[in-house]
Image 1 (cartoon, rainbow, N blue to C red):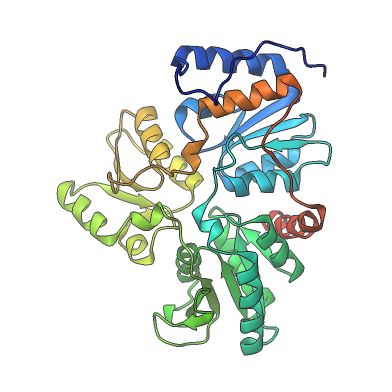
Image 2: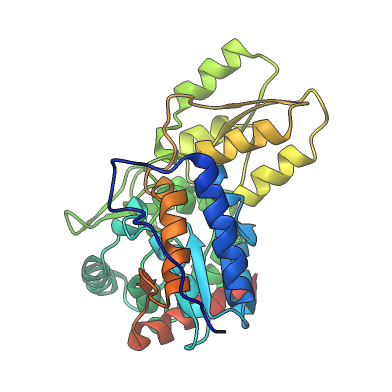
Amino acid sequence: MVFHSVSLDPILETTRAPMESMELDDRIATAKATLGRDVVIVGHHYQRDDVLQYADYKGDSLQLARIAATLTEASYIVFCGVHFMAETTDILTSDRQRVILPDLRAGCSMADMADIREVEESWEYLTDRFGASILPVTYVNSTAEVKAFVGRHGGLTVTSSNAERILAYALKERARVLFLPDQHLGRNTGVKLGISLRDMSVYNPQEMELEFPHGEGESLLILWKGHCSVHQKFTPNHVREVRKKYPDIRVLVHPECMYETVQLSDANGSTDYIIKAVQSAAPGSKWAIGTEHNLVNRLAKEHPEQFIISLNEMVCPCLTMNRIDRPHLLASLEHLIEGNPQNIISVPSSVQEMARVAIDRMLAQS
């Protein structure tokens, strides 16, 4: 495709004359039409509405991983999400394709809690203690380097949508699983599979040692001491308070919430599970939902026939996800029209190969 030169105004370098909302929308729509089929925009459900409206594909982590593998025609994929998601897309797409993250500051605090150096140190410590009995499993909310580490050691990735299936598979392969980097998803999934809390230990990368918050058992499930900064803020007290205020409300939470919160809820599941639960609910249903605010607010708007609130209305949206805004999306698209792509996410081939192995193992079991 040949891109024609257009006159561009500075987008992000000036704060003296910010664009009006209508101008932003007009320019994004024009740029998207100019680029045509050579560019695909994908967006995570937690993304802000004014950006997500431009996504050609929307989904949660597993859905977007599957979609990314099918996007064979587009030369550029603009990912409205966070860094690890763009990395996963680069891993799953061809060498001729380029993945763009509109704002490089859109990271993930959970992914950052499992540094590859710390993971390698933990493996040495744990294999000294437990031998070859451990299979590493990493949530897709992790860096490409951590995914590659897991792939090299026979493991696979996991999402909140397929966590039970993948963890059950992993425990058939080895006696123990090292679950990275979200302890809450690991613990909540382990409980669903019948693993006692006593048989779950926690690896603390700061202290480089195991912790036994529920008593020392068999360490069948070794949880990395990491968490989501958003879902961590939905507490058992929020569940109790919302039930007092709305006695007939149902509490629906994401399994990245802490164990005690999940146990007090009426149901828990992935982002896709939460969306489908609301979509299939009867008019007049009442929900207090413990997940990212952009999604909760969107569900409330889309289903006015139901009563939908956040389980904790004081929680902010995911700050790093919200770094992807319309000015950054516009800048990415207009740089492509200029033939000067910016913010390309490129995973080194040495990392990409084994990370792809870990992801493909997951997809084969999903």
